[in-house]
Image 1 (cartoon, rainbow, N blue to C red):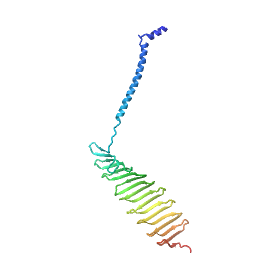
Image 2: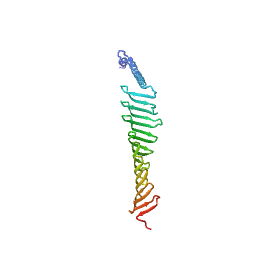
Image 3: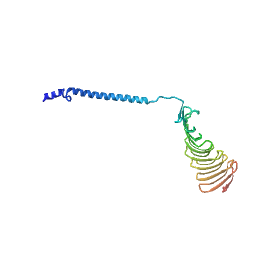
Image 4: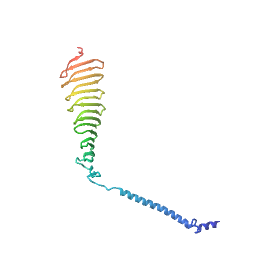
Length: 260
């Protein structure tokens, strides 16, 4: 039995069991492993070659013009345009600029949207720590929304003059102001630091009336161009009073009359 086993193992007429088949099997396994390694290495080299081939060359220029299929100018990417901005400007088919995004020479970022005639209809920028958004055509009605030194402001303007302004101060107190054609505040409504509501009326830049509630009393001050001339109010205890003053601020009469 032992000789039969050895004879069958050494019998070269049985390639499946012969020692040469064993050596060929080991060589074939090694060859397959080597081919797999070489194939992976070759694939890696080919892949790396393709990736490197896709890396574009660096192009350095001051301006790139973008055109459509008909050769019409549709955009300009400039390192420094006529205003000194690094900007991308896009044009419509008529050649009018319709949008611009860029950075001013001082580092201020800007965004502009233009109307069909090239006029600016929307402007957004960050100036230092202040943010400004302007909507509307220059010289006509405009709306401005801004954050100025931490205070949000909304202003409606007519031909460059603010006519209505809403503001929330850095201390959190709100204020609404209405202005005349000259830009002078004609009426304002706000709440002061001690939670005191105030309604102010003015003419030609001078305050003429003030209505407020202070320390539980309702007070109305009426003024002329020289100062307060009448004070009417209702005290916290419910007692009404009216005081008249001269141009120097001296009391001339009082109702009810004070006890002598």
